[in-house]
Length: 268
Image (cartoon, rainbow, N blue to C red; front, side):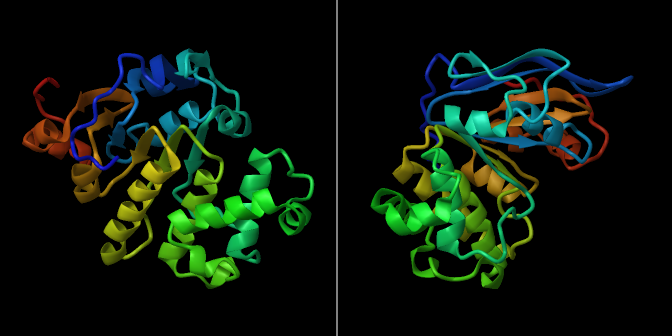
């Protein structure tokens, strides 16, 4: 899904926001935001701090209900359904802050996610010991994310990059159609960032993930992996364009890194 830049999106989006706004009293965190993600796409959402990226992600993943507008996934209205139900429908999320259980092993951590998908969450560890299907799936997910040799390692002893991969692996264990990544390489060294992204994109292809959406500040990663870039500023969509056009526009780059936007070229 890396962007060999050859993605050929289908006419019908896998998911889309339609005129979505989110208000907190007089404050408008999002204002009339519309964008869609289609089959085969890797879409990056960018913008300065306070642009509305986190609010948009929370609306898309069902944590927040929009004040107005629609959020649709595979043709179904998912506004406010919550992340558990959304995962069952086929969209999962990896968080900016590593969201793992430090006392559990890699195997046990992934077992929780797989057992949740298989609806055996009442006792995933018992299921792991007795369920060959669950155990095989844990091994498969660990393998595609490069954690196969770490299955019995306690999560707290992993490197920061490995913890990130484990968090992402937990999202992959839900067998998503679409995966949403919130700063997938934050907190890891520059040298590890591309390695993590390469593993992630390869794993997505192997797992049959149909689209990836990431919120990302690192413009190098955004340029390298995106098919499209959705830029937010003060809760509105500033642009929705391919990376070549985005990075050829100095005013757009200036707006995204946090300076006051100038007159911007319209997206093609």
